[in-house]
Image (cartoon, rainbow, N blue to C red; front, side, top):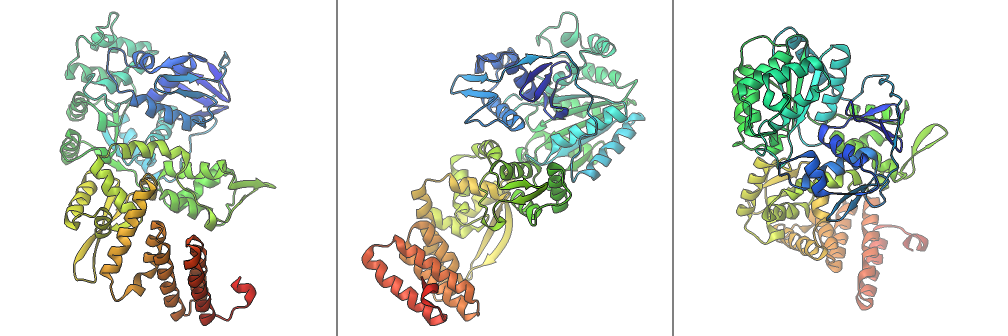
Length: 580
């Protein structure tokens, strides 16, 4: 057992503990952490890590960065001031913390890993395992977007299945950029976890000697489908076997063939397979889609789709994490709104609030240091890596399209993006249609009729954080120019009825740095608000216009400020102190 900080790494059982609580960690990130912990205080190069974890196989170094990002999140490590994992640019990593060896065993977890909002899914998995334990093989596809909680759900289910139902569980994970490099890679990884069980080792050595015999052939011979099926079914004879294969969107064809074969075979092994994948990574041509549809039609599989959590689940999560019975008013709604129910985003939003000391405890009660309406959350640090990875898969033209949409907001019309790019709206709509079909970053959101009688499609970002990342990632000058183009197109479309879109015009002109035009639009919006007896709103709009006038040259500012003050006097009975 290796100890560092508050953590203990159990290499024999391949698990990580923080004090007396087990930290969920997938096999490959665990392997990266173990290697770094076993080689502390020295530079471990990219090549050394890749050779140690993927011998005789080419794997892109980007895979290591993905796993290190995940580890930093679990360890609470700041990449700018690391306590555990230091990045040595273009070379590798160094494990900084002091590592000690301890002999005492950690106690078993005192209670089941608790997750929120997934009771129905856990009950479904438990019922399927009960059927499998009676000799009715089961295959479940567990699907959902990145961060939806597939791994967490599996962790909770496996913990209960192994402790209460007596099932044996092994897990294998496909690796991005590795599919096709080594046949059956996640399957071999999973079966290799039986290395401490003598009976299982004997079965594997008998059926798969080229992998697990006394003299394994190190990949020079690949076993056939039938051999692997016989081995798996033999392991599932005496007691239930839970075989978990994760991230099948990166799996090699041979692994998919094995899943197909195991699902179709006769016999009554006590076998349950759970296979996960992200629909966003699988297009209509991916062989996984054809496999799933065929098995589903033949009633040889089922699917559990993990959607977003509802507000109650978010509230339950916050109550659990804060160990309290009451939450500050509006906190659950705030976190739910900003995370949109994505469990990973929810956890990152909560951690961001605590790390920034926006959520504090005093006298045993939690309170907000800043009113929710004044909190500008931005993108929580824990999500930057994941969002960068997803956006990094876009082509230059695809990213350009999404950047143009982000100029308007989370929901935007194609005509506005076309104006921002100075491109034909039909070409832009074709581009968005393709993106909506092939990715989970964007969804169609209907159509609307414009004042000139034409119709334009609307689109919505799958999550507001994607929009924020795309917006913030644009150079300031380019972003300002695109705002100006959208404003000019708005004025053209709504010529003669500019009052109806005055607020939108003001926002775009202000973002473009077109101060005079923004002030004019704010004055128009104030007129509209005053005509509707919304005096407070009108006053705030004019005050904002006064603030913007500070950006004008002195000779322009004096006349404009005088006009603004006259407009305020016209609508409102204000004292000199109020005008100040």
